[in-house]
Image (cartoon, rainbow, N blue to C red; front, side, top):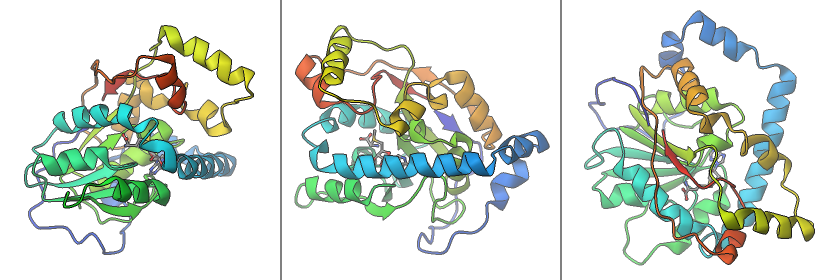
Length: 276
Ligand SMILES: C[S@@+](CC[C@H](N)C(=O)[O-])C[C@H]1O[C@@H](n2cnc3c(N)ncnc32)[C@H](O)[C@@H]1O
């Protein structure tokens, strides 16, 4: 979990207003932090853009099957994340970042959040969330957006929940800085390093035999994601301006146990819930 210590916002946000430059976060970055982010070369930025485009396409393609495939595994993890929010959700304005079908946002609404925005790179995932909603169920407001360039004013949200989103960011520090700019506190989850399951290798082997090859974005981001490494995550959060950072690992039952269930979930590969 990542949180800073600024007092809560005193007036409701105008979420539709155009985004302002990130002066607030920039003011608290050290010169070294700024030097570090300045080290991204034009080639690095092109590579990030290419990975992001690949991710968007992958999640657009996965959206139709999400609710009957990986979705149910992510639901309890999103609920756990909402329960671990570093500030009260009741009455809060919440951003569900990398919302997918919006499980974390719905958990925030169930906890009494006043307003929830679901932001995701994939508009198709967001549409899937709207389709999956039960009649009369309060729903987050969907906004298609990239976590590294959010279309919201500074301090629009009391809490940002990022369930399995940061692990997808090629520029982790940029994503954390945006979360900090728009929110007063952040809770984020990702798969902890080192998880394995007896059925996983068998499933991977069969998938490979049938020609499955992990796409470039998966190979580049997921297995070695900086976000999954507590030390690197903490350093990136500090570089993004968070004053107080806590990382802990929790075991959350996902109901994912048979090879068939693992095969239906062949996106992210390491299902240990690291709430950070
Ligand atoms: C593993 S899914 C998790 C979805 C949902 N949070 C959950 O827990 O069920 C990751 C989500 O992050 C989104 N995502 C990946 N990169 C993103 C980015 N740069 N900005 C916004 N969303 C992103 C994907 O489109 C996808 O919906």
